[in-house]
Length: 293
View 1: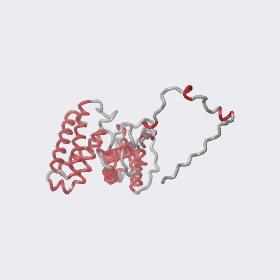
View 2 (view 1 turned 60 degrees about the vertical axis):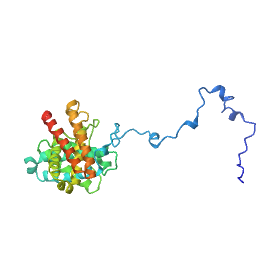
View 3 (view 1 turned 90 degrees about the vertical axis):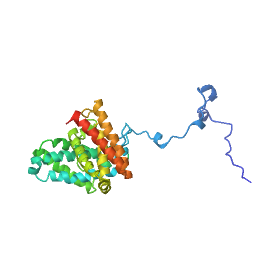
View 4 (view 1 turned 30 degrees about the horizontal axis):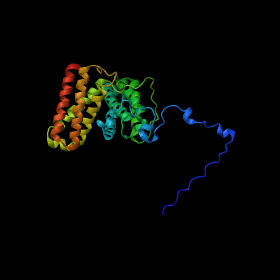
């Protein structure tokens, strides 16, 4: 037999004046509006309960970078580029003799990767340092348009910063930013076009046969994802031709083809990847015919 629930003894009928003044004599005569139905109100979800402003790691537009690129590809892009930029700044003579152009392309790729890491919706290495790294490497990438003593010194400093991050230590260098962030500030369009050409050359060889594709499928996936990233970035506000419908159509078609190629690569679908890479090249060639840098 269930035990009877014990209830607290109600207070006595006599109230002092201070306590009585805290209540209405008749609440139904004083309050207005319909009586709320608390039973119909659902509990807020965790996302609804959070009232923090969007950060650079969760862009206001809500774009999910994970639909284009994995954390591993972004990290590997940075690691793989370190050797290129280090060789380009090995000596002042190498740098001024043409290495500055290789450094420009390499630093721009690193800046792009850090930019996407900062905005990525997944858990990616270096995310805490990504905004600072993005701005530092973007600046040196733009400054490497020419080979001067100043751009050489800055490049050597950035290589040291890159080694610091790769060794697992946080950045000590601080970036200066006065304006709001724009993707066009990460890398110049010609540098990104150069990165696309690298991807195009590799993919063309990697899909020459099914055996070549199978041997290099991980690298194929890496290059496809970088194509998808660049195709999305060059459509962003303030990029050259970003407001040109024809240019945006080419870029969107290339991105969509890269997404299909990505899906095929993850499944080992050689025929699907080959067809999608062909569509990427078609969009790229058509765009170059009209908007060659």
